[in-house]
Image (tube, rainbow over all chains, first blue to last red; front, side, top):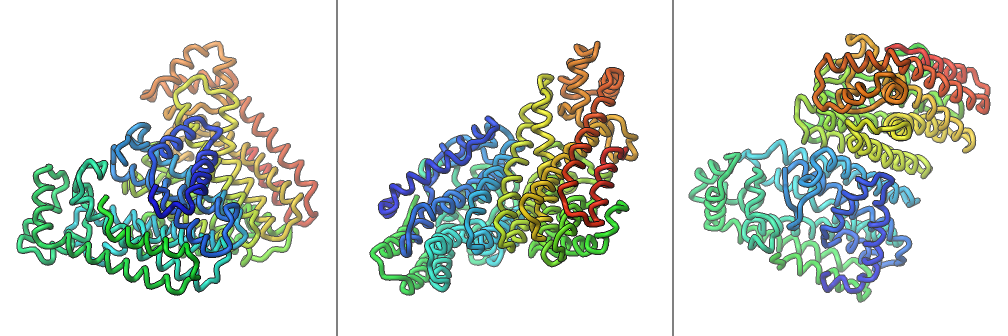
Length: 320
Length: 320
């Protein structure tokens, strides 16, 4: 686990056990697919953000637990549905639910995890929590559909990209920060600041993820390099290069090929690197980090606040 | 529209317009797939039940509208996910979302409709509404997975059958009756009675549906006869015949064939009819109807209550 989660480490252990307990179903197959997903690991970032945000206010694990578990379930549900969509055969180096059980079971496992999150959320009296998560879920679906309907089109532009990564990643991280604070009784204006903080580090996180998909070592990435390109998803470095590279016509051709060879993926990445698309994207992520940190000055001056600065800095420099 | 819905006909028109308005997305493809589903029609039973239940208490359309719309969206979401699962190419005689747009888009359209229902539900302060719908959604998923994991097995038994039809149909109709009453301020004990009424007519409704899948005219059914048998789903008439028919060994063989010819489907249905499986199942549906009606005596004696008796009787005798 990442060091700056130390202050919520024990409570994240409780969250982990609670997730495992919550997904137990009367149906043995559902229990099995859900446990498979859980055992595949994950950083549990969203529960961690919710707990840390709660620590800035009137923290109690009892109040935060259902929310923290629900956030991870929503995230897992979206991953398992992504796997159906992307025809992915591995995630984090282990076989996906889809690879083991097929599309049908994956879809219903995702539905099940999502529905379980709703049961947890229905325990909160504050309507903000269910409202924000419902609206976030709607937008996450919009993002997925947008990704499918624009795939392999070289006309994907900056606006498409920001629309998609906001929905894919930033909104749920924003909600995690905001609602952790809400559940711990934060004033509305400060919860909004945490929402913005989460949104901006979420954008930076996804931009970095998209960069790493091109430049990381395959072993650290746990999946083949250039996965987005292979799926026709244009990320920031590509969009930048399609505008700026002297070889943009060739890159456009490569992008639009539906079944790319490894050689073609490598050629595209080389063009992108040479055009400065990677450096530009790292710089864009850094700017989001700076904006994220600006929000923190409006929050209570508790020692835990330093952790938010550390997380922001970490996301700006992470290379795995 | 069915006659006994006369007293909520105008308000169902408002529900219909509201559904159409709610599913509009910033994403044109999502709007298109959702509208396609809506235009395919449907009886809007669940909104109708919610409004009728509300009429027994302190009715106002404003209070009931978000619930009525949400119930239909949840139902539609489950249908579109069913279509992914069943490889259905038509529903109610028109092409499914899956047939036109493929599995991926269907799955996300279902997710989107479901998420939209949550936004509506999050407007209610009474936590019972979101809690019941969340728990219902969990169970609906369990039912789907159970159906997949038992398909084509001749060992499907009565318990499997009741487990599945409760989750597939009865629980959401039960919730529609119960929550329509809750939203209109019904006392808890009476809302529970309406829940039971809905549960029992829902069971009867699904048993009748399952019978009609074998004996209806294909034209009225809007899909080929014997669809459940083709998908390996054993319904009440089949389970009865597998126990009672003198030709049960042959029926068992037929049930377990994965790609049945029309001839084999016809042979299976003939065995089932000859064993009395159809008559037995109609009788079982009738018993549920009687139980359902018993609950009504505990409800307020308003003229609208007659409609509930009429609905129950109609479900018992419907042949389409």
